[in-house]
Amino acid sequence: MEVTVNNTTKTLKFNFKALFNANKEYSTHDVDGNNLGDGATNLFTRLLTGDTAVIVDIIKVAGGFSKVSDDDLFDAVDQLTEDGSNIDGALSELKDELKNSGFFLKSIKAQRDAVTEALPMLKAKEQTEEVKQQVMAIERILKLLNENL
Figure (cartoon, rainbow, N blue to C red):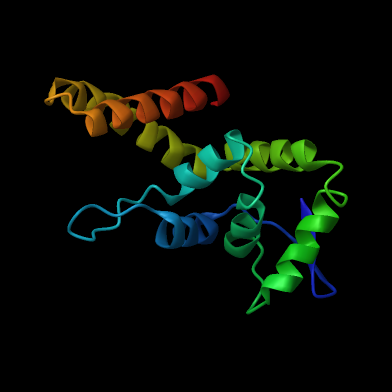
């Protein structure tokens, strides 16, 4: 998939560098501030849920552009989505790109498997309202991942 930012056209590359940047920039952190290395999964999940803002983040990690302004990124998203008339098509194409990348696919599957393994432990905890909401959110994400991988 090609994207044009500030009159420069590049092919989005979903290589190890993009995976590294995704995990560096978009991962969640534990209570001690440790990076959980789930940035690729977070980007993929956001694609699955139709979060159009993820397009900017994907361009940042996979585009190889040096410093660009938000306005230039927004223009690129407008172009990719045909000014919003093809949002679903752009999201679907990006989803396929992540699935076709050996690096991203391996990382996403590893995260899915780790969460699947941890879910019973979370369910075994005292079921406060917060834990119940976490379980529901995790189950929804796992369902999306399993349906789309």
